[in-house]
Length: 97
Image 1 (cartoon, rainbow, N blue to C red):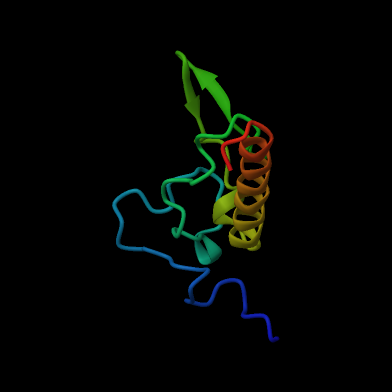
Image 2 (cartoon, helix red, strand yellow):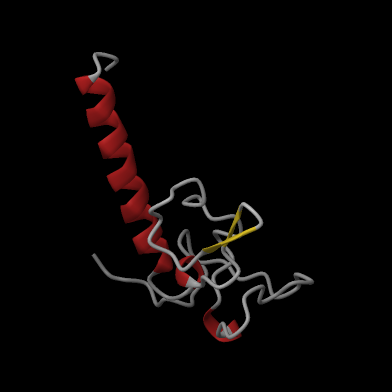
């Protein structure tokens, strides 16, 4: 299976350069900034693997560019699969599965 270049439009990469906030993370490379996970699907996880902090009781991900960098799609999908498997196993152990 051939791997698509990291910054080429595909199911794993989308860049919205017309967005008023593009790029929305300081220091990010606009040439390869992936907007696909504009709202990170890992936000709900305490152990998301990203570089976040707490600001007034709210998870602040403004310092994290991991889902937007090359390889971010693959990392995000892998982490979601890991979390889903963990939750499935937990549900089965609790008799709910």
